[in-house]
Length: 204
Image (cartoon, rainbow, N blue to C red; front, side, top):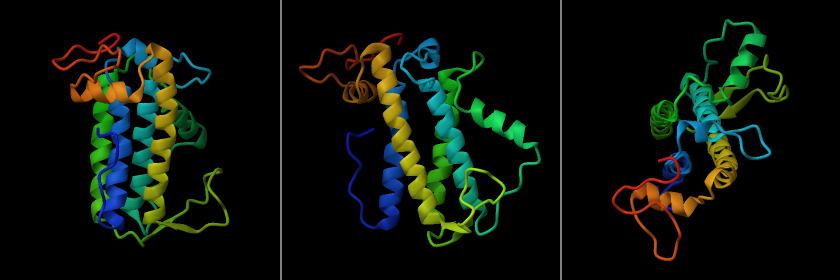
């Protein structure tokens, strides 16, 4: 993951590169953590690194699934609303039977699907707003594919900020240190356990 998104040539390349850039933050913020650390909730929030990885995986699946189905609605979930809401809540929690590696692999697969859609979808296609979900606006009939992609980028960026705070609370690691570790480099002047050649950070 680079520290900055690469230059862009047009709207579509900007959407793709910024989506990929914010997707990559979660691999850095999770770098070197054990499952126990990834499951921990050391900050004021009830969120964990693993829970955030799991949430942004589900978030992309849901929103980009709407893009894939546009201009139609995706197939309706036949489950009762209470069950759907419970599943949504579970998306924010790393369960004892889940591993960070497994969550990151699922996230990576979802990232690839999202990027393919950004590369191919008509940005002006209308994405219907579901009228049976309480938190969606009732006065809005559709979003554009463009709007949905920007919303996904916004969600990824917002939750990456949450993840930064949680990670620093766990072991003091900050994003530039983690980037260096993920890429395998030691940066002069930093006190960091992430060094070229492979030693990982806390719990690594």
